Image: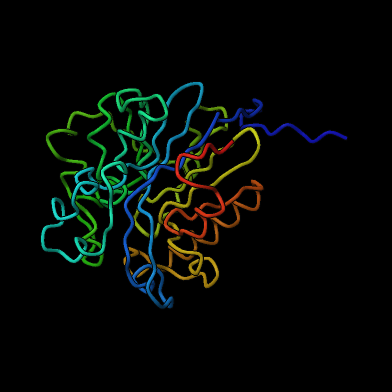
Length: 274
């Protein structure tokens, strides 16, 4: 007995992306309660970006901090506490990692911006030929963040002179099929921010859901708990439930991107995931 071929909403057989890479990144040490309400103790978190190869394009999912953080966190944060919380190396910048994989930033055709916090959107300026895809209401939020999350937003990331002429597309669907073939879907799961998105990647051997900041740590899943910086904590919990439902329905592996325990399961940075 053979399994039914997965199909898109239009009835077309779903294709897959070719490969997914998690890129190496700086890491930050902070208290878990700053990530998940009710969690405790110190935690070290990665601050990553991802690369997807597809026949129709080369896709970045988020871009991490501004690359100057890989040289010295003080170049971005000055005397803010983050300077002493972040450990980084120059080779953790995105450009040298792309070159290891045979690409340059100019080769990137799409950048999926999960949300506009600077640890996800700080490197947008590096991709001059890309189309930028963002969730509903996220640009407005970035211009007027809530008091609890204002320290996470830097307007120059998305309004600066070096990105102001970029090609921005705001998606409005709950699930946006990037290429219309089912390989890469953007999942609107608001709560952390209004336009927060996770990403479903269908690969030849497995499906993977990149959580972005819908959840920050495994404790958020275990306790169904929001983050202190969520713009709408009640909606954030609803989105966690929805995320877990999608993971189950798609028979997918959930990659909680800020949790090193998940990275240990998916492999070292730049390990091809297929």
